[in-house]
Length: 192
Ligand SMILES: [Ca+2]
Image (cartoon, rainbow, N blue to C red; front, side, top):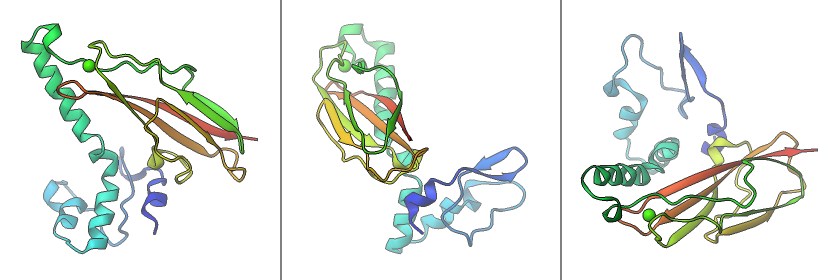
């Protein structure tokens, strides 16, 4: 099964008041009673070194690990704020989109433009831009190529089905120490 398609499946009820993402492994039976890391699916997979299994595990946890460097840097900056004066510490960029709405409705085949060039950094750091599609969150596989310009422009496929959803992420990082990143998520819904 295509792992990305699998991630589009909504959480499933495991037991009373416990909802989780479905696992990409129908052979795994969730343990009864108390759950620990030691009896988890991820622990089981940790011992599997077959390339295909490693890829499945890596993709399954991508929604978590892709953010970790930014989370760690954010924490490091906050630690700096405790012991340094304002000018000696780094602070996050501020993303300013020219069109501020984050919920966008667009017809199949239409052209879309987004512009984050007005973004600023409170320390006057140099900014890096990255636009990318958060595929696991949406319902259409990759339709947007990653871009590193302050602006992005693309056309929706004429075949895009009404009701389909694309999550577009605008990521802006500075060159301070540690480098800090902010995000904006634009949710594009295809309409008739
Ligand atoms: Ca900064």
